[in-house]
Image 1 (tube, rainbow, N blue to C red):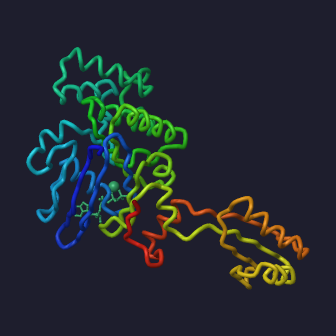
Image 2: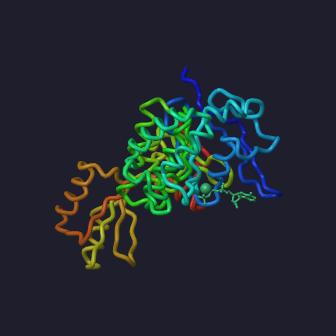
Image 3: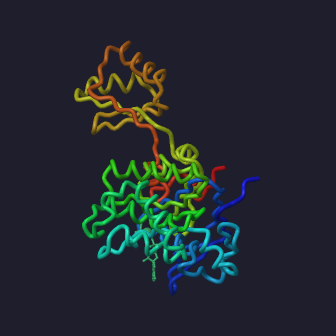
Length: 320
Ligand SMILES: Nc1ncnc2c1ncn2[C@@H]1O[C@H](COP(=O)(O)OP(=O)(O)OP(=O)(O)O)[C@@H](O)[C@H]1O
Ligand SMILES: [Mg+2]
């Protein structure tokens, strides 16, 4: 069995009478990317802060282990095993990128020589060597984010928490960040990531948990989560009411929207199913004005689980 890098059992946190985390179970195997998804205010940052010892869980919480260390009794050792890049930058803008890195090296009690070596290596890796001598206030958002993560890596952590590492980054910087995360994991590091971007979870995560209302509404691989929402469909739109009516007859079983003159058929979006639909229209001599194929993606899962629209009979379900 693979070791768990992060294990939490019934994680709870309330502020006053407001329950933020209401019994969250987490199990993240070593060397994998785990993604915590959730709308604003779902409790993602709260979870990251608890797991990284920045705030305490409620006493009613079950045991929490990170990097093999018990959060309640071995906080010091736990802290030494992890790195945290918070939602809001830890970069000091007044000093240079290099100085920020050296400060981190000092915090980790590296010798001057080691500190300089690690700094040079990480600045190089994050493509910041050229900018190293400039004040961080002159860095772009993407550069600051890279510096932030480089600073997190100074202590060579085996487990990294990244709280929304790509929020506000342009597509190129976001792809760069994804590459960096993948490199970390290929070195055996475990990454616990929060994000608002479903595409990001789809792209990176081995497993995804959707946090809603203080609980994990669903958990699984991207593929497993997509299977939770009703399947894809093909939508046909007509401008001519007569064509629309003939099509509705030809395609029995389609759900109709008589006002918008559209028909919707359940479909997995495969070539075979599309051909069959088109063949049936052809035989009836009808041409649709528009045909769109919709396959369920993580957006659908996210909205179904967090939007209140709900997936019939199956919210709060774990897929394994
Ligand atoms: N120190 C605090 N005191 C009181 N309430 C708090 C405190 N910190 C967080 N909260 C509340 O806990 C809830 C969860 O906040 P949290 O920052 O964990 O959400 P999040 O999922 O990270 O949201 P976002 O996507 O906006 O970053 C929010 O309703 C927030 O107002
Ligand atoms: Mg947050």
